[in-house]
Image (cartoon, rainbow, N blue to C red):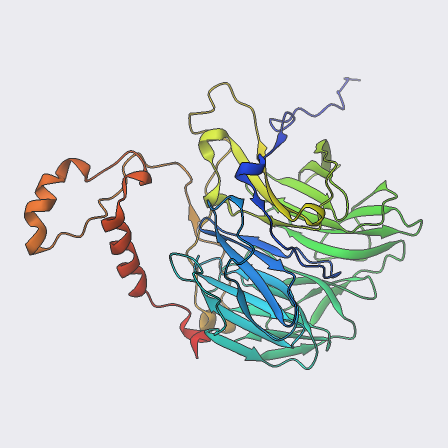
Length: 445
């Protein structure tokens, strides 16, 4: 009989978390005191949005991603809600569009100026009214443009702008689309996992396990798995893997610890890495997932003495590939009024060289279809893009007849080694082009 080692070699076994210094963090942010189990933070390559505490109504901060250091207490905010803001999400296909939901029973769509929020923003592009109680969750469709899902305490799930409503018997705790948006996984107050058809609202699968009280749920793209976090019958924090086509029995169960905080799951489909971050503690565990047994392999964990209230995640196209950064969190440390970037890094000898094995083709910022196509039953995966940096950046200077002489003089600058070469003239040109784009025609109303 041949001997086989149980040790599984992984190229991610040396992963480590590198927290930013205070100078490269966002200090002085009045993080919300809301007790909901949401992330309260959303990031993209241009901005970071953080839900804040305020007297009367609700607001959130939008800061340029490189605007680190001490934040002015009087920094302008987005403050158009009359109740607490409970969730914010950037449009995955427009870095200048963000959605927010609130206790005032509304969902609002905001346009953020290219230069950032320079004065209090109170007028939303669109206010979506359709719920009778506070709206706790919002989620953009992963591949179709202009589709936004909202879940409220009136037990209804609404997909905007078509306002197709599905009634559930319990309050939603977490929602998650699969990779092409054809299925929706939810956890409810009864602590069961359900898989729905988001077009019709029909329940396709319901978990039957009584030993697992699910709180959060997440589709594991590419592996045909579903992950839920919650608590066991002994009140231990627990993770469970399911077959999304059969929720009668879990594929894998593991008790982690006896802490009471919710476990936030995050998954990277490019590396098959799973991150579990506990609310109220400073730990983030790293796992590697596979489609075969034992399905999950523990790697290591990041530890901090500063507890996190919520976390935001940078999309892959905003990572520093020259530093072998494969994931980036933004930890909300409420006791310090601090938003701390935390980079997940794979050490490599030649870190300045693009690592093909760490950065395969990934989901980009281009929609795969329109909302109308999705409603007609079309399913498409995300449009992929390469993260390999192009050493040549296109000339930002518009060539007009009056400026041909100037452009000839600048011909040596037609391609630069970095975007830093773009001057104020280039920024004006970028703003001009941005104003010509058609943005969210379905929600724009």
